[in-house]
Image (cartoon, rainbow, N blue to C red; front, top):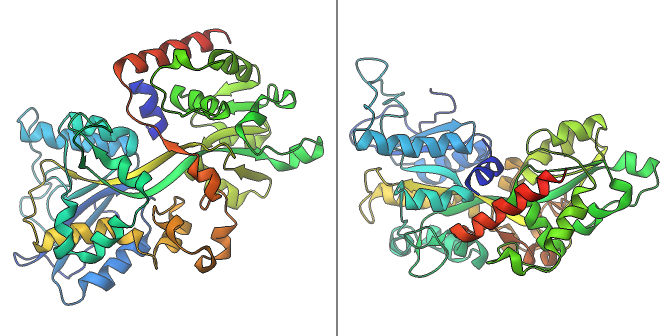
Amino acid sequence: MDRRTFLSSTTALALGTVLSGCQSTQQSALRIRLLRGSVPALLTKEFRQQFGQGNSIHLDVRPEAQLQDLFDLLQRWKRQATGEIPTPKPIVPLPIPWIGTSPNQQAANLISLGDPWLAVAIRQKLIQPIVVDGWKNAAPEAWNAWNSLPSLFQDLVRRNDDGMNEGNRQIWAIPYRWGSLAIVYRKDLLAQKGITPPTDWADLWRSEFQGHLSLPDQPREVIGLVLKKLGQSCNPVDLQKIPNLRSELQGLQNNVKFYSSQHYLQALILGDTWIAVGSSSEMMTQLRRNPNLAAVFPASGTVLWADLWVQPALAQPAPANSNVDRLIAQWTTLGLQAKLAPQFTLISQGTSPSLLTLNPDDLPEALRRNPLLYPDRDRFSKSEFLQPLSPATAEQYRQMWESIRKDR
């Protein structure tokens, strides 16, 4: 299940890495569970070079295929701790130093989470706040990296105990990668038919795209792009107060051939559609392989998403200023370092949150020319993360989505 599927529903040793030869009681162990492909090997190599020299560190990194798998792990660890399900026994009767315990047996120190899951994880008490202020003395380079982040990313992870962006807020995560909802199209087919390429959401309503457009099967993203087209925030309190929203949705639907959050790229490559909307990270591989595809970061701004580092609530707390506490600070902010952010962005198919704070002249040309990884500043400034919905607003989304889809 990807982040869009999650949004819709709500409104083992591979890649393991050890920095030292074998684990002993003197080692600082850092257990990490992450989304496969979201963190390049570059990060582990750099971590080894910066913090492994002269230190006895056991770094256990294990990937999961989907963000939903990682969220399920958080829930499983909690159920094990409360006795709802038994803790699994190790596969072998005695621990093997280079393998350690079963991956589900002990909660990780850090785990990847998509931003749509953050509010739910907080409400279910699956994660704990991150005490960033303690980094000032323990890990000043990590503190500086966090403190230099644009407010958009800091505000994303500041939540109250109900997971909302209001009231008394703590820091619950560290963003390490972001992307966007974008437009992708077949530039060869459009050129053959003399159709001007799209630059903004309003182009999706053009008559020449009738029957040739695919949209995500996800109400918040589709309604969000319509809101952006109308010059509105994609986080409205009351959908009923948005002028022309329903009529704009109906007009857009006239052009839609199908809704899909998974198969839109295949249809585009086969020529079944000419233009589609989807996640920037999913587009990146095909854009590199297929010269007939081109993508657009919409001029009116768009919906953003982020991958985050969170600390499971059941992980053994790391004492302030301890070695493990410093390692957590250093790992979560490594991809934010100015010297690593450009390369991290190019390899991971998502943008480091610190990239837009850097001097464009210092960035590789391949990055500066990529509108998805390095969008125009004005377009980015008009973009937003989706915020948690109140029950009343979530019901409005559900009703409007069901009503519009019935009209097909």
